[in-house]
Amino acid sequence: MSFQQEFTASLESGAPFPALWDVVLRHKAAGMTLQEIYDKLHIIWLSHGYDDEPNDSQIRNELEQVMEKTWFERPIETVEDSIAH
Image (cartoon, rainbow, N blue to C red):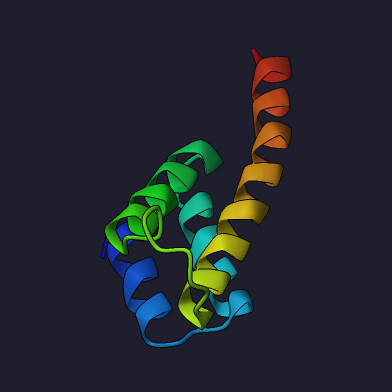
């Protein structure tokens, strides 16, 4: 199952942040970069119409929490990659 499929299924089933973050970490360990993961999370966010909807929902809050953590973890990965090269 792709990251996007697994994450969307977990999100829509009502999984809490820790379970959603586990999906991120599993796919990162399998070789995805945090930038690739963030890009997929953004696609999920757009596909749910959150760019047009101002209302909060539990699903939106969980998704945005994962997006925020992924975004702020991402620069660490970028710095480590640049040091390794």
